Image (cartoon, rainbow over all chains, first blue to last red):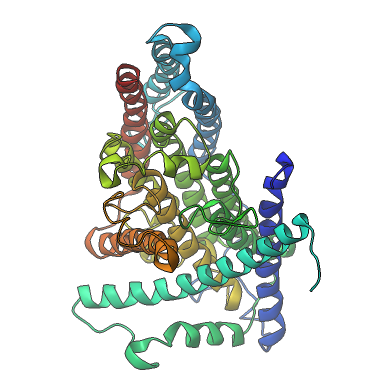
Amino acid sequence: MQTHYIWQYIPLVLQILVALAMAGGMVAASFFIGKHKRTKVKLGAYECGMDPVGDARGRFSVKFYMVAMLFILFDVEAVFIMPWAVIYRQLHTITGQRLFGFWEMVVYLGFVAVGLFYVWKKGILDWTNTSSRGDL
Amino acid sequence: MIHLSAFQIFLLLTVLKIAVVLVITLTAVAYTVLLERKVLGRMQNRWGPSRVGPFGLLQPLADGIKLFLKEDLMPLAVERPLFVAAPVIALACALISISMVPFGAETTYQGVDLFQIANINVGLLIILGVTSIGVYGIALSGWSSNNKYSLFGSLRSTAQVISYELALGLSLVGVILRAGSLSLRDIVNSQSAHGARSWNIFGGLQIVGFFIYLMAAYAETNRSPFDLPEAESELVAGYHTEYSSMKFAMFFMAEYANMITVACVATLLFFGGASSPFGHLTDHLFATGFIHAVLPIFWFVFKVFSFILLYIWVRATLPRFRYDQLMGFGWKFLLPLAMVNILATALVLAFRS
C-alpha cells in the first residue's frame, strides 16, 4: 500500500506538527490560565536576593567555543562512517576481498585518531587552568 | 458506510497512532516522575509522595494542575521570542523522536503498521538529528534568560551534550554494522531470531558499545552522575532558573521524555526491541490472537522500564562528576573506545560472514 517513497515521511511531518502544536498550546494555556501580578522585584533577573550587577552578556571561557568547533569536525567524521557501516556486510562481495572494508576504515579512523591526538596534546581537552596552555 | 481511499485510511490511522502514542508518552512521563520520587525516597529510607490519592498515585495530576495555575512570569531583561521558543523546541524535539520507535511486532491493518508511527529507512539518523536539535532548546533558554546562572548552566549543558553526542553516534555504528540498515524495524528484526542469544548486547558482542551508549545517554539527558547543568549548589537550577509555571514544567517534561526515548533506543538497538528473550520457544503457547499481538509490547515496555529504573538507581547511588572529569571522560576515554569498538566489530564481522 505504501507505493510512494515520500509517503513514509508523512507521519513524521504530522508528528512534528502535532508536537509543536502541543508544546505551543501548553505555553499559551499557562499564559492565559495563570493570573498575572507584576511587581518590580518579580520582573528583575534572579540573583539570590541581591540586585544583579550588570547583565549576562559578558564574556565567557573560550573553551566552550573550542568544544563546539571540535564537535562539528568530529561529528562530520562520524556521519561519514554511517554509510560505510550500512554497506559493510556487502562490501566483500562487491570488492571480492574479505578485509577491504576493514582496511578502508582503519585508514579513515587513523586520520581521525591523529586529529584527536593532536587536539589532545594541544591541551584543548584539558579543562583545568594549569595544563591548558594550548596556543592554537 | 463511507468509502475511504487507501490514502485517507493511512492518514486517519496515522493521526490516531500519533494521538495514542503522545497521550501514552505524556502519561508515562508524568508517572516516571512519580516513580523516580517514590524509588528515590525508598532508597533514602523515606516514603516519597504518599498523600495525594492512594499511594500518592494522583500526585502527577496535582502537580500538573498546580503548574498550570501558577503565574507565568517573564522578566523584563529576557529576549522574549527566544525565551518563549526555547521550551517549545525542547519539548517538541523530545516528542518527535518517539515517532520512529517500533513498539511491537510488525502488525499491519489495511497496509498500515499499527505499532510504529513512521517506518523510515534512516530512522536512526532522524532520532540522532532530532535529539541534536533539542540542544537548541537548552542553548537558547540560557542565553535569552539574560541571567548569569542560566547562561553558565546552558553553556555547560550544551558543551556536555555535544561532546557526548560524538561517543553516542559512534557507539551505534557497531549495531548498524551488524544489521546493515538504519531502519529501526530492520535493526530489531536482525536480533529477533533466537531470543536473548541473538540480541546485539550478547550475540552481537556489542557490550562495549552498549556501555558507551549508556554513559553517553546519561550525559545527553543531563542525568545524574552527569547533571552538572543543574548543579543546584552552584547554579541554582541551571538553564531554567528564570522559567516559571508551565514553561518550567516543559523543560522538566522534555528531560523525562528524552529519558524514555533513550531507554527505547537502548532497548531497540541492544536488547532486541519488542522481541521476547525466549525467542520462538513460547510461540506455540500463544500462536494467534490477542495475546500474540500484545506480548511483544509487554516485553518492550518491560525493557524500557528496566532502563528507567536503572536511571533512578544510578541517580540514588553515584555522586556528581567534576566538570573537567566529565569532559575528559567523554573525549579521552569514550571517543577512542568507540573507535576501537567499530574496528573490532568490523573485524569480527568480516570473518564471520
